[in-house]
Length: 316
Image 1 (cartoon, helix red, strand yellow):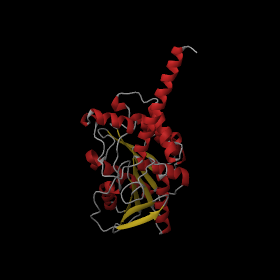
Image 2: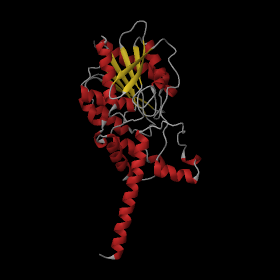
Image 3: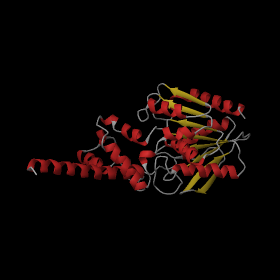
């Protein structure tokens, strides 16, 4: 074999192995929160050259999410055994029409849902706020971006059902929305309605979107991250696609999206909306990104929620 061809093949093999090593470490950091007191990795402009090299090879450090506050209302803390032990807060309304279960996004915890829970409480619904595995008061430090969290959605739904609740609504933001969609797809949960904020369309697309702000090609690193993330957590991440889950969702659905979202495209939202069956409503917020919509659109968000819940109530 020509020596130049040998060098070329050796170079290609070396780069391929190096890319896989980097992807392996990044995937591990992305799906496992840090239990130590080490802070979250700063943005690139705040890192020294040595820190940038370390982050490039070993990934971004994500501290384990911890609850930052507790409810101001009377609440009950409930521990449930799912695929992991999970912790929930149950807050009851004085005149409950039903219960809304709230599920947080990636890198968050149930205390981040308290502002939205308060709105549901004022609308006359009990609320149950859930820490997914790896967050807050729940077990472990692992996250699977909604894949295994779907079982935890089922666990909380089953708990309320066994305790006599017949009117159960599910609310989730980002990863929480994805977990709801997968739970309905896998377990056929008979939810009265679901409210979904900015779910991604496919796992590959959401990882690819992380490369856009850096102005670097997403291939092949995004694909390698998906492969190793799935391998480390024992699931096929290439098939973790809410666009497909939507095909098996027939309950009333309110889909919410911020038009400035840099992590989820409007195309993904449109595909999800198209695949949903039954009553469905899509509401968008022109100036919102991948964030808490109450920051800029509390009045509009509240009105949309109230309208949708009233719509589903009248269909009883």
